[in-house]
Image (cartoon, rainbow, N blue to C red):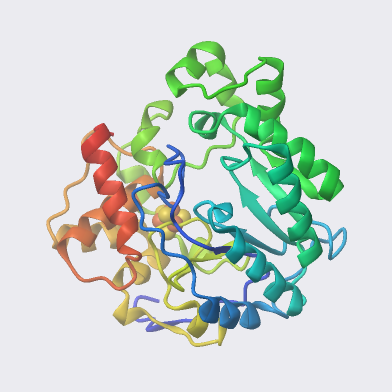
Length: 346
Ligand code: SF4
């Protein structure tokens, strides 16, 4: 197994396509470290068209119907905030529709939902262009950035237009914020005082920006706990993969890892593991990644890690600063993670 030189990634059955990493949110939990410091780089239409063409026929619709939506089914447009470039979102919807891609939806933070008529107009246009549904992101980290009035407005209009294909992730928080009669934004520290205990019921994936910004919510464990683990399953999974606006094929939610150009991978070209030592280590075990880090001078954190993804990202950001690793892309991801550490001391 240690001599494995190539890795074939199975065809994806569900995916998210990033329009951009740019966003007005900078949310603490963001797995891709999106935010306002990213340039407003948007996916090129030609690249998007090629990717959507390659995805068509591979992406599977939701089991309850090809025009129904579900978080882990079909194709979703994401980012970054896709609605910051509505014209692009509309064009991509039309292209995806032309290719017959099932269970097509867009994910939004609702930051742009300042006016009922605006929300209505945009959602009707998208539905007419072939979009099947919409997912509203609701949690205490988005609540820090987006006034809840906008979220409420978006959900009401979204349900009018998309019916049961307007879904909320996470519904629990939407109901809680309604019950608490919240209208504006709420700083996270204030939320903790108001309702901190409910975080026990929250689905919070300890990866991406969260490992530095929200580490105080988790118990840290020594490095040895993670060294025997492998990420072969995560790297080769076929569901809910992501493709970013630079064409990088991202396994699952692993922000900052590029398996290569999506166009190559979707065309069935295997990955040369000898050219991507970080990925080669990850499909073996974390110990291999740790040893690769040590070769470049990485030292384990004495206070431990909240998850294997924390260890993985801590080594990757170190390697990014020390060497040339073509799988550590896009550079903006690592630059943003560094900046946040420096500014907020996470
Ligand atoms: S440890 Fe790294 S490769 Fe594995 S799931 Fe976490 S971020 Fe992805």
